[in-house]
Length: 278
Image 1 (cartoon, rainbow, N blue to C red):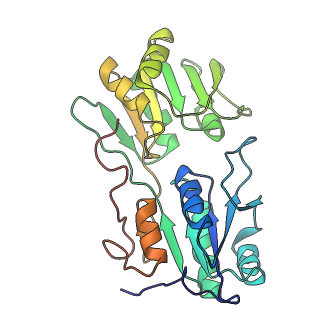
Image 2: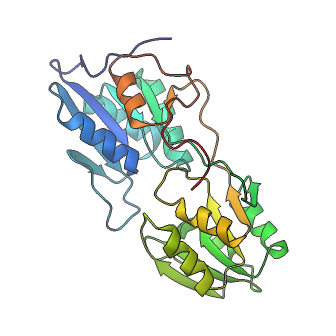
């Protein structure tokens, strides 16, 4: 296993320049942990898809790069030494761009991805490989759907006219969307009590979610368990092969300090967020 002492020595006058991709909680916590270190400069990149994002400490780049070629050029121009992909587990396009751009430039890349959820006793989960598969499964599970897969997912469910949807997202979704849809604009973290009351009030039959992992939105899974509701869980895209990956911020810091990646490469090290959902 190779070591990457990126924080201790950089290419630009002894300063290690680190690019953190993503507006996740893990990305913000990593930026905060690195911000106070001497000899380290951190740039956090946000895709700009959320109108009022929670900003990390330090320098922020908002917007895209123009694909892997544009990102590679940006990395060279800014003298970046290391890239940490801490994007959402479903941001497959950005991850692919990071893999290609770092391969072109010869820079080390670390994937920081919180572990996915695991069903526990009493859970009634149906795992599916895609949003389309989730939509196809709904007619067999119930009419009233609590949809928490993000505002960009609604067009996939637009043809289900016999269903009623409570669609929760941070920003308003854009059409097309299901004919019978109530939009709920809200941002986590949520409580089990609040999620249970929400599902009871709207007489929810089934919950649909992506396997995002983390603690901020697990309350809905516990609420569904307590209410005896089925949950359709959309599996996350696979991590790219051969790229070092860790599951929490302490493991990412250890990797940046030159420590070997726990569990080798291509897997997920660390223990943050593991275990049963909720």
